[in-house]
Length: 331
Image (cartoon, rainbow, N blue to C red; front, side):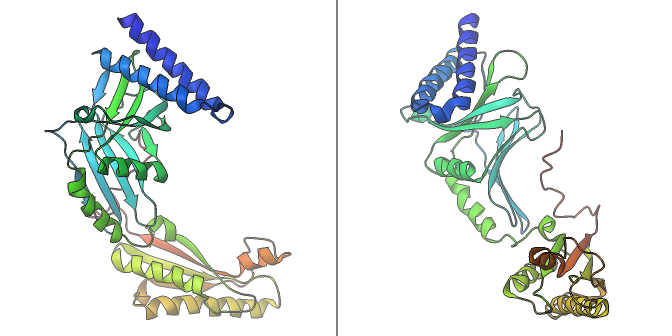
C-alpha cells in the first residue's frame, strides 16, 4: 500500500511539473490536470497516513479583526495555524496561510476548489499553483484567486491546498471549510468599506509634482494631499512631516530657489488649512540643488519640479494599530 501510494503521489507531482512548464503548448492541459488531480485525491483519500488539515461541520470558526488600517478575516486550522483573507488600507485583497509549524515542503502547492465531505457530488475545479516557502507565512495567493476563493466559500465549496510533506513522502492537504462563512462575510465587507484610502507605507515618502515655472496644485496633487490628511487624522502616532521644495534647472538659481520655496509653502498651507497641526511640519526649500533626474529632457525636468513629503512615526507604542500587520519576511 505504501509503495502504491508513493508511486501515485510522485507520478502526479511529476506530471504537475511537466504540464506547468508546457501548459501554453498543450491544448489538452485541463484534461490531463483534472485526471491527475482525481488520481491524486484518490490516493490521499485511500491512505490514512496522508495529513488532512481543516475543520468540519461542528468545529469550524470564522473570526474578524477589523480596523481602519486592515481587515483580517480568518479561519483557525487545528495543528497548523490560520487561513487568512487580508486587505490592508490602500491595497487589494489577498489570501495567505500563517503557520505555527509549516508542514509543507517548499515548491508548488496545487490550489483547487472541492466539495466538502457533505457535498461529495460537486465537481473539483483547479485554480493553478501557489508557491510554498518555508516561513511563518508559507503561501500567499494574489487578489484574483483570493476573490475566487471567497466566492466559492459563499457557494458552500471548500478551497484546498495540496503539497508534498516537508518530511517524508506523504501529502499535506489543507482545506478551508465554508461552514458559517456567510454569517461573517457581511462583517468583512463592512470592514472593507471603512478602510482608509492609503496606508502608511504609501505616504511615508511621497512627491507632489508641478508644472514648469508654476506653483499651482493640480487635481492629482490635491487628491494625494487629501488622502494624506485623512490618514494623518486617523493615526495619532505621526510625529513629524518634512516638506522639501525643489525646482528644475531652467532659469536663474535665485529664482528657482524662491520658486521651490513657494511650492513648499503651498503644500504646507494646504495641510494646515485641512487641520494638520503646523507644529509637526518642517518646511524647507532647495531650488535646483538636488535633482533626481536629468534637466536635459522634459521628462527629467518634470520629475525635478517637486515637493517631497517625508513622514516620521512614533515606534514601539504598545497600542500601535499597525503592529499586527503581517510581516511576510518572518521565519
